[in-house]
Length: 283
Image (cartoon, rainbow, N blue to C red):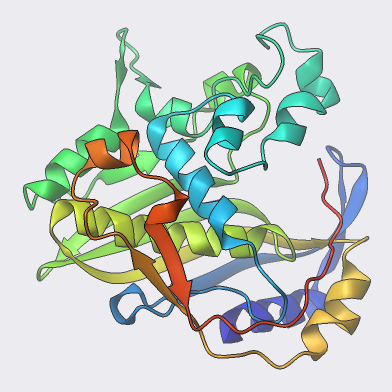
């Protein structure tokens, strides 16, 4: 919470206004932020200065790992965040690559599970990383990336959190996650939950001990219609202590994550929070 609030205050006090062409709104913006999550001591980075709906973030992460490319598949596991980008994005609706209602195109997990090779075919980046980590292998390139610029025209949205790199050191698994763009009032807590949970899950299914997760954000911003709520409401509240995340210990393999795992396999304890804040969402 301290890191989240410090970044929010930095944007409010030091940010510069930038016009955002995609949304037609201005953003108060800073460049570069680094956050650290203590997965080793189970300090779940859930926002406490407003109620945060963490389950949808984990559902979205599961969808990414499974390679989903349809908003209906995400809805089926408890995540509604892709409905608007799949169905209300004017540019995507007019894109000849769109296959119909709920189609997201070639984005996020679909890219990582089928990353195109220049000589034809594709490589499953998620499977490669899981297999290597399970064998204790760290080739300094244990990278899952969603970023494929040559394919941006085939999807409804460029990836914001675009890359995850895993490292093994002394029996512990570490994660460095990179995010090109971040809507701090709405998106950041979603992303924090996903970075933390990704490391916890990968450590559990590979037999490694979870270490720390490092979250690099390049462009951190607050939209102009979010500023008043952040400055005058959320930043005036005192945070509570971090809750803890509990993952079903029966989840032991990547195949488990692909097949039977649901949101019922995740729970939190010790979550105290202030009341919800309804921040506007920009498509």
